[in-house]
Amino acid sequence: MIRVTLQARVYGPYRKWLLKTLKTDLERTFANLDVDIVRLGTETRGHVAVDMVGEDVEFAANVLGLEYGIAPSLDQVSTGFCTRGHLVEVGRVGYGLYVDIGVIEPARVDALVPLHKLRSHLAMDRPLRYIARTWVLVNHLPVEVELTNINQTSQTIDAELSKETLARLRRWAEDDHERLIVLGVTRKIMDRALYETGHTSDIYKVESLGAYEYVLVCKRSTRASGILAAIGPALRGVPIHLFIPNEVKANLDGAT
Image (cartoon, rainbow, N blue to C red; front, side, top):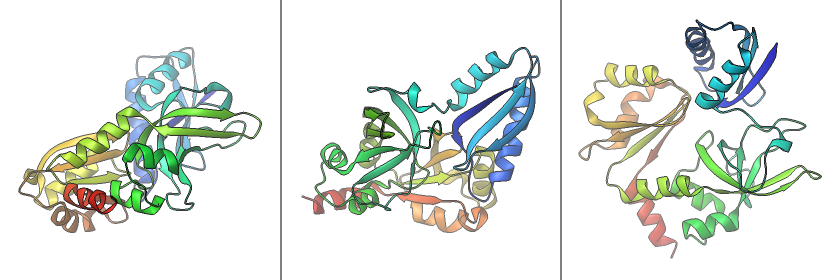
């Protein structure tokens, strides 16, 4: 038997449903392989852990890695390594943002994006909370980071937001479409909430950020706050955040 721990995380009020849906999807994917899923659960932080047996488990593990990302151990990462992760404990400290990239062996180690890096890359000489609020850098938000320093002895990792993640934030800010960031759901759950509240036609497109994280891009005539007021009760407990370009620009102007 092998255990594969994924970078994908499940959390929030739909946690059990996400795991059930994922198991069904994987059993369908591996239907023609010699693979049996013995157990599918989560680690402490919500990373999905899959226990499998069978002659094709190595192939299945590669499939999982391509689709959901494999959580690396500390000795598997190196300087210059780009990897996906999720923001965690945003606002707990003022010296930077912590990113859970899935490292749990030999100990849990989150990557730290120092405040000075954020100030430089986002052109804001402001406290962390101001920067995080402006750019909607919130818990569970998927980001990509480039690792800049790794200390095996002290078990610490320094990182910076990747060019891709920075470009995404700037693109959102320069766009005139308001957005809702919906975290911890499947596309089906989200689409059902829009349909039941009569707001499907108000969404221009849906962007996928991670396995269970999405961005609803509103039509130009639609206010994201109105969509939130409607679907919020249908997705009770689900983290939903607004990204309003005009508010971002106002904060940026106020930071100069």
